[in-house]
Image (cartoon, helix red, strand yellow):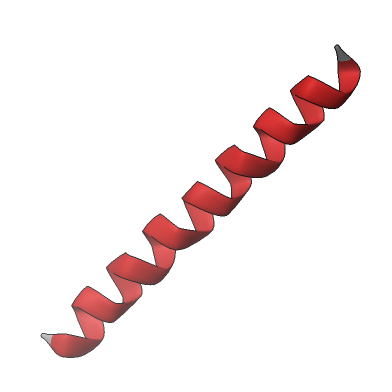
Length: 30
């Protein structure tokens, strides 16, 4: 159970990082 929640948290963290990078790239383009 702990491992599963840890993996889910890591996945959410990864998505958050990708979203932030995408926003930064968009801001850089504009």
